[in-house]
Picture 1 (cartoon, rainbow, N blue to C red):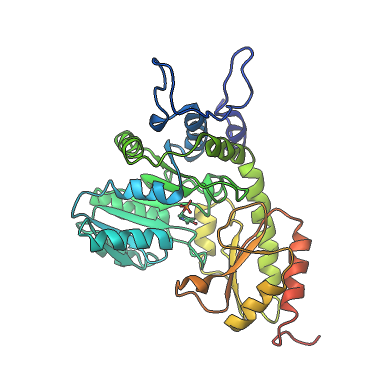
Picture 2 (cartoon, helix red, strand yellow):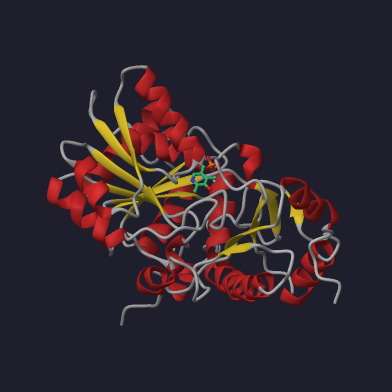
Length: 367
Ligand SMILES: *Cc1c(COP(=O)(O)O)cnc(C)c1O
C-alpha cells in the first residue's frame, strides 16, 4: 500500500541494514576512495537522502543546491541563448533581479505579466521558452491558477516553473497540477529553523533532472553535507510545522481583520480574500504567510518596534514568528504593509503580542 506524505516525510532517506544508523549522518568529505562517490561536488549520500525524500513529496526527481537562488539560476540556465522567459509580476525579487541582469547581458529576454490575467499569460507565452510563477506570492499572498497556467505553457510546448516556497509540498504539489519544474528556497519552511541556506528544484522530466545535476556539478553550487543533514531533519517535521503555522495564521488573520487599526488583511484562508476559491481548489490548507496593512509606514514601524515575541526580520518559514515592513525592499507593496511568517508558538501568545502593539496606534478605537 502506498504511504501517505506525512509518513514519507519521516521514513524516506534513511540508511538501512543491521547496525546502520537510523539517520543519514552528514557526509563531511570532499574526497572518497575510488569506486563510489569519488568527489563531493558530484553529490554525496547526504544530498541523496534529502533529495529522495523531498522528491517523493513533490512527485519528481529532486536536485539540491546551495541556496534557493542557486536552484533558480540553474533552472533559468535551461533557457536557450536568446530565449524569452515569461514571469509573473509577483515573483521573488532575487529572481526578477537575476532575469533583468541576464537581459542586460543579452543572454535572454523576459516579459513580465500579471499572471492573474490568463489572456495576458497566453499572449505573452507565444514564442517564449519558459514560464515562471510563484504562488502564494510575496508579499500580497496572491493566488495564481497553476493548472490553468500549466495548460497554457504545455500548449506552447514549454515548461512551467513554480516557485512553491510558501506552499511546500505539504500544501500543494505543482507537478501534479501540470508544472514541469518546482523550485524551493529550502532556507525557508523546509529547513524551518532559520539556520541554513539551501535550495532545491524538482522535476518530472528526466532530461531536465540530468541537466540540473550537470549545472550543479559544473557551476559548483553544491549544498554542504551539514546543511543537507539539517534540511532533511527539517523535512521530518515539515507537515507538522506547516499545519500548525497554517492553523495559527487562520486565527491571526481573523483577529487582525477585526482590529480597528488594521485596514486590510491579505490571507487566502479568509472567505473574503480574492484568492480564497482558488486556494481551496489547489492547496490543502492556506499556509502560514499573511500580510496586513496599518494606516502608514510610521504605524507599521511602531507595531514592529513594540512587538516582543514577533521578531523583526526578513525571511520566513522558521519555527519563530517573524514580521517585516515589506516596502523597505521597494517592492511596490503598500507602505503600511507588514508581512508575517506565523511560527509554531502558542497562537494566543502571538496574538497577544500583536494586539498590544496594534492597540498603541492612534487609529485604534478607545473601547
Ligand atoms: C527566499 C526565497 C528565494 C531565494 O532563496 P534563497 O535560499 O534565499 O537563495 C526564492 N523564492 C522565494 C519565494 C523566497 O522566499
